Image 1 (cartoon, one colour):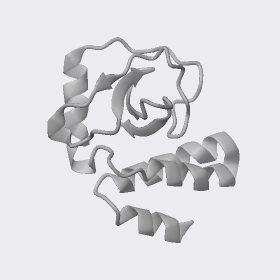
Image 2: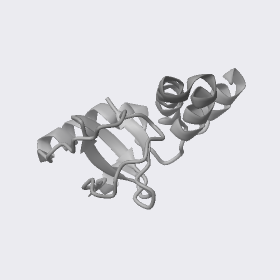
Image 3: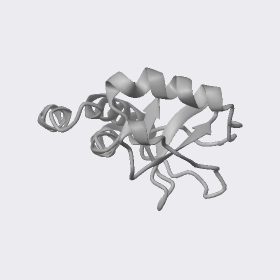
Image 4: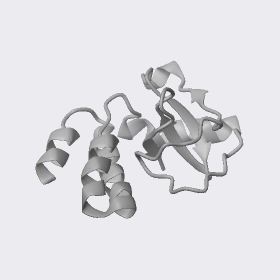
Length: 122
């Protein structure tokens, strides 16, 4: 797993946070196998870069979107119901594949085709 984390961390600036967050979330849900799957899911390229995360979170808070109440764990890899309202990420963040949502008060990037959480912006 350490090799996978090191390799993934080199792929893009936002990947490090995604890998670590994904591994922790996966471990909570499914133990050690979940940590491996979560790390892989969390290391998705095209997410919000670490240095842009605070600015993006501020942007989302300023939009004042309502938070969706989700009964499951808000972790990378979790699939949200398609009733969650998702929003476009502004172009200056260079994220074209994903959209964002506010779930249980947390800002998350979501794959709009599967509604799977790919990144949590804390």
